[in-house]
Length: 485
Image (tube, one colour):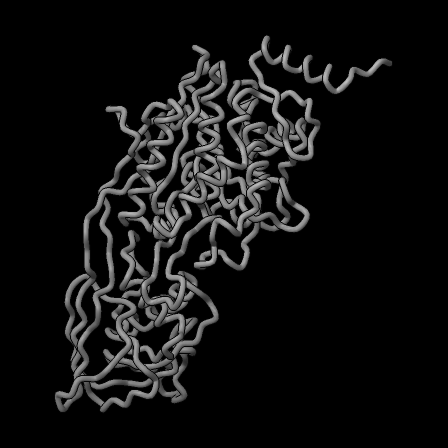
């Protein structure tokens, strides 16, 4: 059989592209004569680098929800959507912003502790407070907090099997956990104490402990959450601090401020009259952890992989799909969320007040952490909740034709299905999954999550793979279904 020369193959591919509206693009490690959809030429390493280098720059300060730097990032996303030719999808007036007025809270600087003789008592600061100023007076009871992890410990006196507590107690609690996990451990203990009548906890903590670190974060960085889960005020004490048997305490309430929080939404209307009312949502969360002025050295949580990499994918996919000479049959919605790190808040707000009917959203392709591949998985993509719908199979079959693998991760596919913004859509009956191409590496939620630690060729290939995997969705030839529903 006669095989055409390389030049002849390229000429043939270009001729086909002219007639059917696709482009020829070289993809790393693949046949250079492979015909790919028009628009994919927008997905280049140079564009990916330029986008993520800005989103994860120090100048954007870690994109903490509610910060001025987050607003700059949101304006940038809106400008990119506008530049791609998308419509604003935030509301009826055509804005790109889907706004929610939310209350941010922050811990006050410190409370006031006074000994029985009127002398002030030094402390590290506050870890939990109530809604309003609270005052306490009385003796201090030292207890072993470790024994309260699972509830009140039994009294050694068999006469009454309950350990009687006063309103003010002091003790220490060790933890190997970090962040919200550590706070959840303390919240369980504090709930048990409150049930036994405790109203104030003096918690012994070393200067470099997780408790002091969390106190500094909650004091320096406003947050939007339903609360810490710790029902009583907590004051952090140096273990060596000696206190008489009675104190007076004043603990101020939470500091509050109302701010407008923004999801950013752009829409590419479908070109098929029968399919345009149906939509595919491509999404990622724009927020990260902001910065902490109390850190030594690097104070910024840049969040390059988590999740500037996902936002970069959304923006680049918007450019690519919008560059197609023929519009996709279905409409495409590109969306970035606020408040994912605070509990999926932006996506929850969207599904509460959707700007596109939820029953017309065919699928949500949510993108999380695609910048640093696991060993042996360079250029490959895994999907959460693989067995919950057939979306993974649809996208795997399509992407595999161009040599990109989409697969079920043996550990994370199941474990992380509920961990990102796709879950807000799942709870409303939408087929929704997160797509990742990395691991929970050592820089996760650390200041070292910088863009220059990402593998740009890997990211670029993954974004192309997501486009290729989505082709049956956007052209209306495949409609994913939930399993066991």
